[in-house]
Image (cartoon, one colour):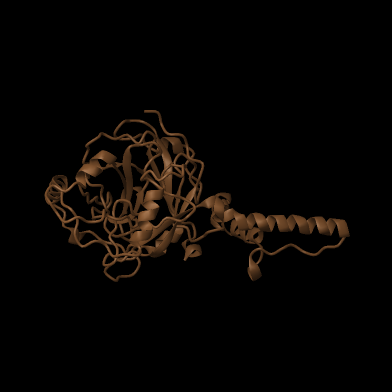
Length: 368
């Protein structure tokens, strides 16, 4: 199957409140930080370990990201080692992609015995009005990938999760498989969980466009009247945005970092950027041979493409669920590349590993 066209639209993820498991039931539809991963019905649970210290990895982010015109539900799960010496090492991060046909999900949700009628499981994903999902569907129809998910999420936030669900033969089989993996969940570090909401990055530029228009009018007035009124200050008492960028560039001597700061300035609290087939926003100079650094897909041997990246503002949210302080996770950005063809074998029960590229933060204090 031909690779899907590149998506030019960039979506940004924002923290949208804590996900309390006592009030809300997350599913594979849920975009979230931390917590336990919600695997698709046929996918066996996995407990990846750190390639450096061997410790169990913590679940960092879950994203539901089906592709346009694809019959598959699709998830990406990112894991990282919370150890103090491990967070910036590429071997200490893992990203797993899992997929499941809509028909397989429907079969898994079909009761195997007579049970009282219930409402279908609800999605806890909190979508913004500006975007329907992380995938590439730009249509407005309610086809179960976008608008339907949004409607379910709005209901989910108003009602507690159902106390019981229908149990199928497939679900029971998957649970029995999980018991044989030999990893105790008590050994796996769990981070506090937060909802991720999403919006179109282009919507952030509306206020900036208005300001630029006002500046043009002011300059025209100054030229016409022959007087100097002064530049509009778009950053309050702290000085103009341009001045701040110049100071940042001067301090670091790094044009890449300066561009990074300028790009995220309309929304510095963004924790995730998604643009499958687009270009990542590097926080420092990437290797000149980046195309060779990104390995080929381990399943089909095809090339990989950029899909999403984690942003510095996420770091402060990564706290242990047991009440401890922040997890020892420090990074500038974590860039995720996935199989360009999103290859998958129907009926597979094992998630496929994709590629992570980790950059350290040149000045972590700027984001705290």
